[in-house]
Image 1 (cartoon, rainbow over the protein chains, first blue to last red):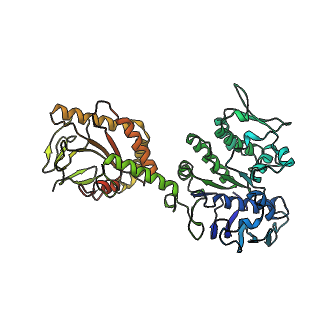
Image 2: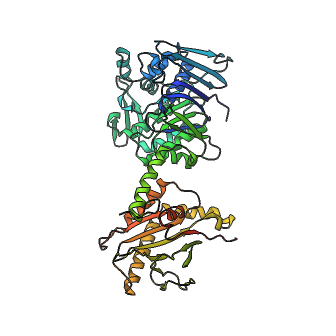
Image 3: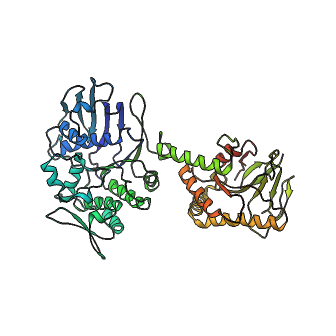
Length: 346
Length: 183
């Protein structure tokens, strides 16, 4: 497999909930785990903003961040409690570094690029794909027109996703293995009405408008559509916030299978998840050749700290497993009549 | 000291009031009450707890399984792991445990040793690879579901434990450890 450019690392300094954290990524699958409010989605959005800004040659990363975080002022991204400090992002992508910073109390943010991206003429940066936690597949009808008319209270990941769902990428690489695997779960083919932008699921039983399709299946339909129209092409990055939302655990093995297929095809994947099943599937399905890294986000008074490991069993902290530990402990205390210190309980 | 060995795990049941070991055709231990059963499927041990002033006493019925890799020939460890996965994911395994529980009930009733008392059924096993609490908990729930019976006055409490879990809950009274042997 060619060595596609990918996010290598990011350093977050006084950014949202982070005081000083460095994350080093693998080219395959990067899974973020942590309690609510530990900044998992913030990292996804920061990386997405950096890549999207360069891929689409947008004016500045500040503008992208502003639309992603829906902030009135960029200084709102400075870590709370130290509002006059400087907030910095410093990342490495494809061997080039990118930086962004803003100062608390100001209304603007500056992005400084060190090095030119791309450095060579043949180098270019693929447009990344962000699938937010909320479903957009069932809400495509008239959405983009509305977004153009008024400032909708949706962050720009939603608008970007609806845009990509409706567009065919030129020379995009269709991910046939993903399409075939997931289409079985859908039980039909996807069809888009050109005029309205609404999607339908065409099954042997009939043509079902997407809002009538179960939300879990709409999540799968989203991935199928992106794979069909070429946006999940080697060299790009997939950011998927909480893929488990609305999904029955039974469907998660196929979804994780699809994530690994994409990673093997040269797509770097980032997921943020609260699901034990997603993580365990990833742990069990990943082969020795797969690059999978788990990141544990932990809230502390000094800001969120992040640990990483390539072995799921060693992930610390792991708040999901901690909850299972607690439940199993309660179950055993009830069934054995003894607590974990061996004391009898009634 | 009443030491018993089952599936390569050594137990010290000295603190128990009674220990019944009845799926062995020829028990080799010294001490304890010897009951032979080769007809019904049965659990490995029935342990009557020594609880001062409590009548009837409580019982622990213990079934032991081990896939502990250090005891398996290195060439067969893969098959051992596969056997474990097949057993743990199958409902048939839960039914097999249920049969052992019912078999012991029938055997004790047949020999007039059955006492109506709070009974805790413990499946103690050593997995070939570490298992987290989510996987152990789901097996516990599945087993508990299989053990429900309206015929029992007391609820049957089921616990699926690894050796570490056993020693945390029961180790003070009945310590256990893996018996090391050279393959």
